[in-house]
Amino acid sequence: RTLSEMLAAEVQDAYFDYDKSDIREDARATLTRNATAIKTILSEYPDGVIVIEGHCDERGSSEYNLGLGDRRATSAKEFLVQLGVPADKLKTISYGKDRPQCTESVESCWQLNRRVHFTAGN
Image (cartoon, rainbow, N blue to C red; front, side, top):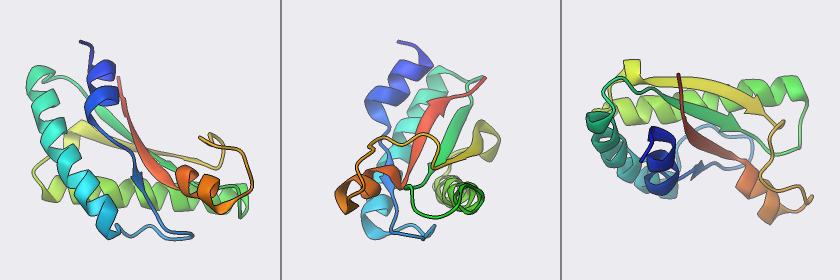
């Protein structure tokens, strides 16, 4: 399997509360599992780099959400590094509200968009 396929199969998105970038309890559990999976994946792909994408819901300005997405990605990265994932294998990027997973203007949809997502970097 490719690095992208392994990430898609084994690493889950972690979610955030509205206007927050701190790691909440359910996200801690998800990121802890992700750290284990990422370390295993990197052992198979020692040259691999993983991108942590920060995403936001549609509320707020584009500029504000780019900053919030960046803070979310950075929080997730710092959490993973504390669990032993090599910092030099993790990059962060913010897409703000530009890549929604769901487009309805309801809380359940907004929650899906307040996330960090993991992809293969180059």
